[in-house]
Image (cartoon, rainbow, N blue to C red; front, top):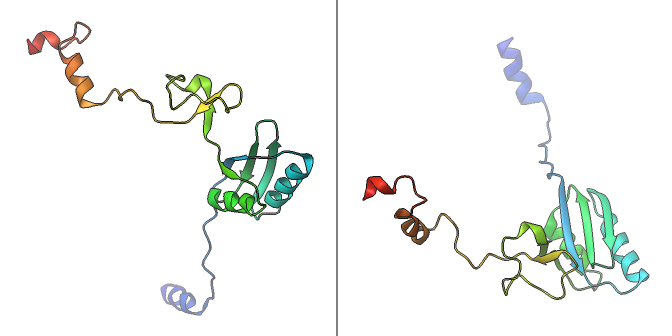
Length: 146
């Protein structure tokens, strides 16, 4: 059996399989003014290979594409329609610790959303934060240090 398996590997023609892209949801901000703009963007993206669904929200200037697609290719395809497009820069208001930080608050953002920016305050794992909590009353190991 071993010799037959060895020889069959040489005589079989197999094509290498491409890895399938993972299922993704791509959100893009696109400036759309009318039904024609909305239709153009929808048709352009829905004709792409791997797209399962396209949701266009003209009020929020948002296009949501779900499928086995590359986000950069979707953005490039939307830009090919002549519209200004970028990845969706906003996150829901309740997911941000400090939504009124100067970089996060945006008047142009849809209701309930703020910009997705790195917070101005340092992270809890920063070294300067560790030194300030080292001798605090809330640290249970502070007595052993003193």
